[in-house]
Image (tube, rainbow, N blue to C red):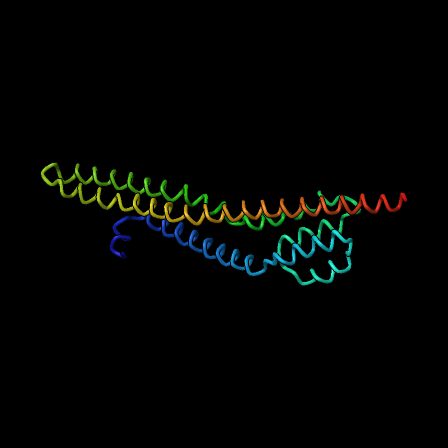
Length: 208
C-alpha cells in the first residue's frame, strides 16, 4: 500500500487528507446517532401526550425532567409556550435539532465531490509527465510512458474509492435525518391536536 501511495505522486497527499476527514466525520456521526438512539424514550413520548390530554402539566414536568430524547425536548418547548405560540416554539426547537443532525454532512458531501476531481487532476498531471518522458526517451522506449500512465491512474482509482465508500454512510445519515424529521412532525402535530381539544373542552366548561 505504501508503494502504491508513493507511486500516485503528490496528489495522493490531499487524497489522504480527504480520506482522514471523511473517516473522522463518519465515526463522529455514528457515535452521534448511537447516542440519539440510546436517549430515545418512545413510551415516555406517548405518556406525555396522554398527560397533556388530561391537562396534567405538573406531571409532564416531573416525568420529563431528565429526559434527553430530542422529541420530548421539542414537545416540552411547545408545552412551555402553549399560551403564546406552541407551533412556532416547536418549529424553532425542531430546526435546532435537525441542524444538529445535519452537522458535518456538508463535509462528507464536499469530499464525495472533491476526491474524484483530485484523482482526475493527479491523473492529468501524471499523463503530462508521461508525455514529457516520451519526448525525452523517444518512441523506442514506450515502457517509460505506460508505466507513468499506470501510476497516474492510481490517483483516479483512489479518488473514486474515497467517493464510493463515502456515499453509503452519507445516504444513511441523510435517511436518519429524514426519519427524525418525520417523527418530529408526527408527534408535534399530535401535541397540537391534543392541546387544541383540551383548550376547546376548557372553553366549553368555562362557558357553561
